[in-house]
Length: 317
Image (cartoon, rainbow, N blue to C red):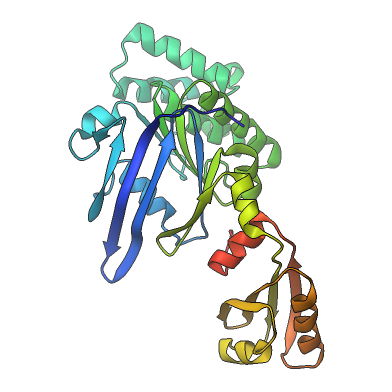
């Protein structure tokens, strides 16, 4: 895990974004320190990508401020973007070009001169392990190689801040590990990173601090140890089957030490006291036939359990 300095270099204050009646981002505030990898976790529809789009200057917030090194993005967008790297979830590469040609194009957009451009391109190709195939057409690359190239294109101009939107989605474990190692090295050199992911284990391995987001709000934030302390001894019980939300609620009503986290068609999520009694009582109700159940899972105290308790959903739902 990368070390990070004490200065807050990215500040997000009271960010709001609405799309009609939908409040996609609702009063989000956080700060990221220099050299820190800050993980933003949330299921689909949580508001992560909308938040990143506003931080990248692609969307204007309805309310709130975004500051980089004390400079407000809306006041000096070009100045901020010159120091900002963005790696989108969808690969932004030209497959008919080579990796070198892709990188030279993106470096040129940042006004790097020919000498600096060639140097930076060579450095990035080496860093992401593509030097040996730098002049091959990208259409022949594997998914992992394309992801590494996509990452390098957001780093080629040497940004001070980087926004990474699920950079490892859809690739194999070895390719994922390669990208995580690159991200660690970039942060260790002093670059500040905001990292979104659907993989809880990535955030646990990589991030200095983690924020959990759902329905446009930040629900929890802290180091891995701080978030685990918040879990305490609580277990999370998920029941799935052929029942509606009301029937699920009624079936577990009155069980001591149980909190209903979420209920929907075919699923109810419960948080227990963690002493094992609540979970046993839930299982007794299930065995008594109170619900038509397909399966029951018990999540021991963990970060994933906290995520389930806060959102009522799995991270990849």
